[in-house]
Image 1 (cartoon, rainbow, N blue to C red):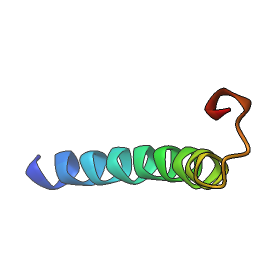
Image 2: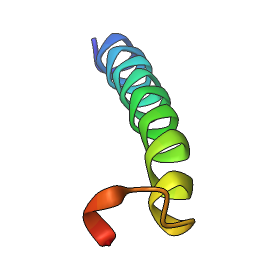
Image 3: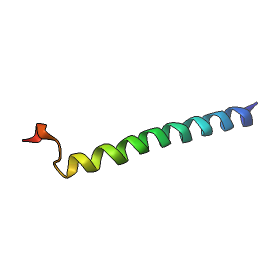
Image 4: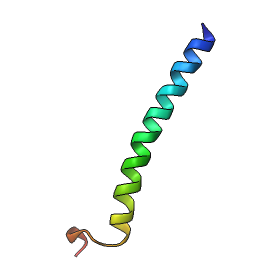
Length: 40
């Protein structure tokens, strides 16, 4: 039972990490370079 829970938690963390990582990888560099017009 504990093993199945750990597998599920690991998959969930991996999936969330992928989503957050993809979003961060796209969002942060654009913000850092000042391409956003809001910074103006």
